[in-house]
Image (tube, rainbow, N blue to C red):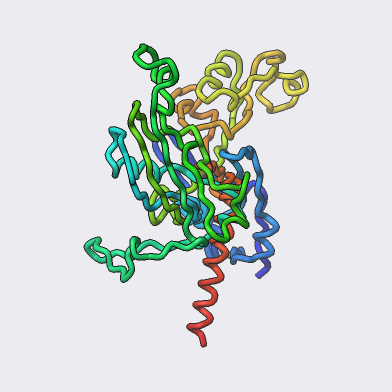
Length: 382
């Protein structure tokens, strides 16, 4: 049987998830073998490569927005989960406190230090080895043979940082009144006070301007007063978000489906203005009806030259609130939906790596998983 011809309109209709006033329809994918008689929907690499698209909408060091088009939801969700939990980053793991005169308890201060994102050159961060977390028993107890304290720190898996700050009076300010910043030296302890100490071969990757440092040096760690001192040594290691949230490289990594707005009948005059207010600014725009449109048979604009009409603008701004469906005058004139295989990703980096590099790293990790699975299947078949 010859493969059935699928018109572009029919192909688009199958991809639209219907958004109704109280329900969502057509949520299940149908592009798999044997669903439609006479149509071949078996997965093909050449066909996927020809249709798959990536469109970058915004690319900033800490925030990127891009679209993955003609991609299955399972792959899109795999990238999201890898970004959250499997991209390795650097964070403080062990804190050795010599002195802590602040009002913050030692364990709370250690926890705050662990939450500070650390950054450095990508080549050096990739050179550092990842240390898997200790395995846990059924009841949560440690089942590791070697504890974290017994493990020997090495230059290729541990970063050493120091924090030595002492608060004192500024010259000539003792006994006076004013703001702490005016009276005291080092009354606020910031992430910028963390000092990196090179160990062994780390000088090849992290020297001078490439030193390990906090991604945001203005993070407030603690407040101290004259005579108070904080003196501690910290060991930072590589980890993944699945080990602890402090290793997660993203503040958020989300995706949403591209909205669709189909205006079925003309919306004119005051109704057009009201219709535009049902959406975020820029989603619906107002344009004047042209003479050509009014003379076109069946356009619905006959005799309406110069009147305002509602047209679809930037659908990416739409939040699919369904507000327009609450109004009876619009319910039959508009159809809302989402494109099932058009994913708009938003990746916000915590600062350890650029946001675009984070996504590329998630692709590399998924590729490595595929090779691992392929090798495992080959071993089974031997």
